[in-house]
Structure formats: C-alpha cells, structure tokens
Length: 633
Image (cartoon, rainbow, N blue to C red; front, side, top):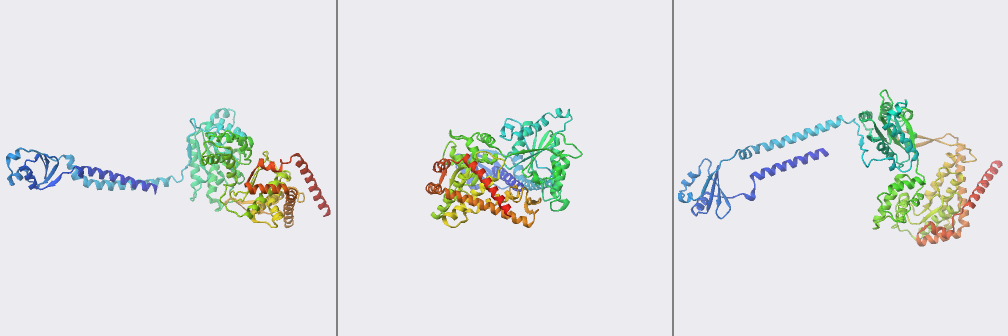
C-alpha cells in the first residue's frame, strides 16, 4: 500500500511537470498579444500606429508604436502582400512599417505537432513501468520471505558501547571478557587446542541489562553485531523460521568474526514435544535448525551466538548442552553499590541540585533493575521540567521512586471524611506494627493520598540488601500486612474492602512458607505441589498434587494458623501502642503524608537489639507451644 501511494505520487508530479512545460510554451497568457481583425490592422496602418509587423504562417504579429502587441489571423496559403493588395492599402504608408517574414523552426514544429501525441504515450508508458515495478517488488518480497531480517549494528567509532557503559554485573562482565578475547585473538586459543565457545546464554530478570551487555561485547571486540528477536523467526507459514535461521548464519559466516544476538530466545527455544501440531510445529523446526547451525556437521568458526532470556527453565535441554550454549552468564539484580553506580551512569547529561544524593536513591530502590533506575531518573527530570526548574532536586527523585513503584498520585480523588479516617487508621496500623515488630523493614513514608490503585500506602525500605529470608521475617511481614484489617475491626467494629490486597499477599506468603520453603514444623522440610506448565502457551495452568487430601487439609490448617498468629501479633502491638497510633492518625488527617523523620520524632526510633532478643524469645515460645501441641496429639 505504501509503494502504491508513492508510485501514484510520482505520477502526479511528472504529470504536473509536463503540464507546466506545455503551458509555458503554448499558453503563456501573461504575454499573449490581443487578437484583432484584419480591418483593425488596415486602420492601424492607415493611421501610422504600427512600428513592426512579423508574419509567421497564418498569424500576423503587430507591434504598436504606443506599446503592446496585437495578433491578426489570416487565411492559410494567402500571403501578406496579397492581403494588403486585396484591401488596397496605401503602399507609401506600408513602406514605413518594418515588415519581417518568420518561418516556423523545427523545435516549435515538434512541440506543436508531435508533443500533443507523445505526452499521452509517455504517461501511459510511465503507468505501465510503475505497475511492472510494483509487481517485481512483490515477487522479490515473496522470494525473500524466508530471508533473515536481522539488523546489523555498527559498533566502531567513538560512540561504540563498551563494558564501561555497563554499571554493576562484575562477574558477568568478567565472563564476557573471555568472549572478547576469543573474537580478537582466536589464534592464541587455537594454538593451545582450545575451542572457541559457540554460544553464551545471558540469564536474568527483565531490565538487568542483557541486551546492553551483548552490545558491549561487540563494541569491545569491534566486530559486526547481528540482532534478531526470537519472535522474528516464527511466521504463520511452516518452514519460514528454519529458512531465516539458515539465512542469518550465512550472513554471519560472510562477515566472521561476528556476533549473533538472539533476544528472547525462549520464543523458539522451548522444550520440544510439548507444542501443538506434533513434529510439524513451526517452533520446533526453527529450534532444530538453530541446533544444527550451532553444532552440526559444518563448524561455524568465529561466529558466537549470544542469547538472552528470563525463562531458562523452559528451554530445550539440547540447546543448553556443551557445544551449543557452552556458557551461562547469570545477571542478578543489582545490589546497593551496583544501583548507585547504575544511577551515576544514567545521570550523565542531567543537571542535579547540590542536595541530591544518588546513594539515598539507591538505598530507597531495593529490588529494582537497571531499567527501573533509568526510568526513575527520567521521571525525576520530567517532574523538574513540569515544575519549571532548571535542575533536578532530591524531592523530584523521591517522588519519581513512588511514581514508578506505585503509580502517580490521585489528589483529585474525592473521598468522604469517614473513608479518609478509615484509610488513616489502616495506614497508621501498617506503620506502627512494622515499626515495633521484630524483623520488619523500617518505615520511610506513610500517606493517605491515593496512588495508583491504592487508597493510601506505607513505604517500607530495608536497611540492607538481603538475599535470604528467615521464617521470622515472613511471619513479621504477615503481621504487618494484616495490621490494616485488624485495626479496622478493632476501631470501627467491622472491616472494609480496603484490605483485600493485603489479605491476598499475606495468604500467598503463608502458602509459600509452607509449600515451597519447607518452614512448617508440623509438615516437615519438604515442598508440596509440582508446578506444571504448558510450554506452548507459556503459562502455569495447574498444580500437580504430590500429596494426599489429608495433607492438603493440614496445609490449609497451617496457613490459617499462620494468618491467625500474625493477626494476634498485630492486635497486641495495636493495643499496646494505641497512643502512638492515635498520634499518627491525627498527623495523617492533618497533613496527609508523614516522612520518616517526622514519624520517628512522634513515636521514637525503631527498636534494635532489644527487638532481636524479643524475636529469639518469640521463636522459642512458638516452637515450645508447637511441641506441646504435638505431645498432646
């Protein structure tokens, strides 16, 4: 459709150009002389008003002494002298006029005679030409349907990506530096009998920088870089994916040494035999061709395949064996130092105020990937520009963190006083319980301003990055989540729908604690339920039960027990710290938002060592009570 519109536009332009040329030669009306009759010409000669007469074919061009031109038509074949004689013009006055006879040139003859016939043929020929060209283009596209559409990037020059542009991921960069050495100095390894790795699989959560690392490898090695997504191989026609794989590797071999980067390889690399269509599944054929190209009869020297995925569990085992993807590089979520260095990289070309601390921003963003951090800085710059500032302030970045994590503020949302009071008690209870219960994260902000889908929120940030979590941390988190539901029942005598998401999260944590983490003393250290996934659809559709109905009842009892104990802990803290709760509620109703400094000024700093001792005692008491229950049984 696009080519048809372009061809039609070209035809219109050509037609307008030809029309303008034709008009210039034949219809220049701004300089066209006035047409008069023969009697007027005789009268002008008799009155001596004519300076020059030019005779051309059957036209007589008259130049007047006063200025201007006139044209007179005469009979074809009749000479000018015969015309004058027939009208008995005075010869003396005729001699005073400069008379010239002009014969028509060959160029004018061609334009006036041939051009009116040639123009239609030219237009018709142009139409046929563009139609044939469109048909040839369609044929060429049909013939190239199975060709690879991989995009090639130039990685040379000053702006080439290098490992310096990738903050964090130190171990991953160390692994990939060897790949760079393989590409730059292959002879050094071949002399020792070492084989160049065929493939490198980058594993990591979305936004951790897998694509950027692959580009950096190409930039460091200064080799061609072919990029293609896994979904680009698959089409509705069987065999196209395999054909594109062959085409891609043929291009790569011609430009070797080079890198082929396949993003989201799980789109075509899923386990075989689980799809629809049997052995003729298009994805399976594409995967088979990838397996053959990477490690088949014909070796691919100096062509390294780098693939990225966040779903390594669904990949086919044949794809992961040595000789294909020899190396697996795991890119973890950045820790505190990595987040700070990532923020420094993305802060280039952004003017910051003097009070901005990237370390503070890194501390407030645990669990966020590099893409999230870049988005936070971008949102901060947008907020500063919206407020008419020339520099980005610390409050812009803090607001951007909350916007990225929970959504934008909804200050326009109108709520009545009763709902506002319920929200204040709900969020204050979350904050109070999180502050006083052992193992919970410290509170950084409490607000009753709606943000995203939440009517209010309590922002808790861990004091340090943790990679392992204990049972007490989970039980404390359950108590914090149930605090809002508990305080509504305690203060107002009934609960609202505002605690729905909290209850869902608390139940999910309790279930994971029992069925996945093996932290139940009654059920023992084992997992319950194997998650089966339908590979073709790529989603979890059911849980395979590897336990009896009796055990299922015990699991439900354990989950209910954890929920009840969490609710009891939250209720004890709410009752014992009711005075602090009322203070926080009053402050929220007055100012709507409380920062960490104001919060701790009202109720004091978060207890430390004493809580740790209390935590140990509570764990001992809980284990003793469970042992007593078992003995009773």
